[in-house]
Length: 154
Image 1: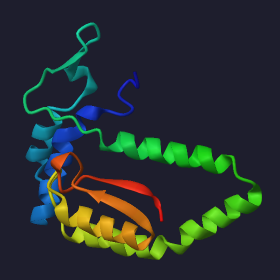
Image 2: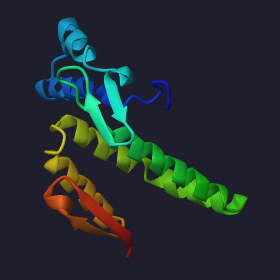
Image 3: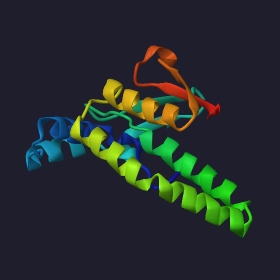
């Protein structure tokens, strides 16, 4: 275990801040404290034999979003380590060429906040950008408008 270094129970705080962003108002200290009272890896009971997880505090929510991002970053780093110095430099230059556009996309996403699993505007914006970059995008995966799958660059 991570001794809490990556705590999947952070969901109540993530949700609170998403609502705050949507309302364009910071949460109160009382709201933060209330959400935080439902956070903590030590408030999970894992039963290995039954392969179950029990949430022991009221209003707990799991949030695994950071795991996928971290895994993707780890895989990208590992793949780039196998490149020659010349190709690493080309890769960095290529990524840098998209940085200003990605900043614009990020600002659009943050200016139109949506709640988790209802992020249809965000998904549409990202899908459009990925299509422009040459990827084939499969929309509506798992019956969710915010979930899509990429199939290599065309």
